[in-house]
Image 1 (cartoon, rainbow, N blue to C red):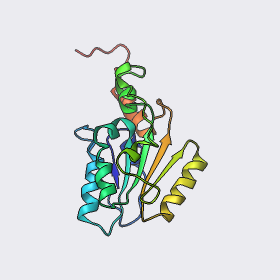
Image 2: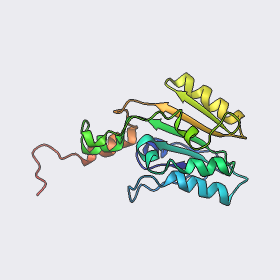
Image 3: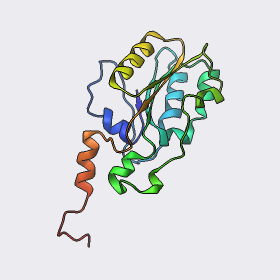
Image 4: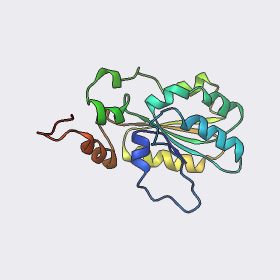
Length: 179
């Protein structure tokens, strides 16, 4: 399992995973765009395993073209794309409403088609509620012969509890100077 730097990593980091699941992330350097190609490489290296990728829309924009290789090589990951209109981790740390944390609007349901996704090789799902997300996960578990992309719609200010704690700790305390 790969979790991209940002809300995806902070959201999954305290989840207990089943035995035998290896989790990859790289919060130390804070660079985004790493996990989509990393999950591709892992799938090529271990074709008997299925990767799961948790990635935000901002990070996905950096390396989304790797979907083309996944589709061409018949790699069948489960991609959970968090569509929260930009860099929510940055909103939490560097300015809730700063324009530079917004990304261009993308139609994530048609994006994979630009790289060769068809009904025969891919299943594109969208979830806006907890019930829709559960249904999407059930379909993903039952569909092992296709690339699965689940677009999860989230509010741009919805952050995981761990990220809320960290961002609160980083904010200057009243009456204290940064000098």
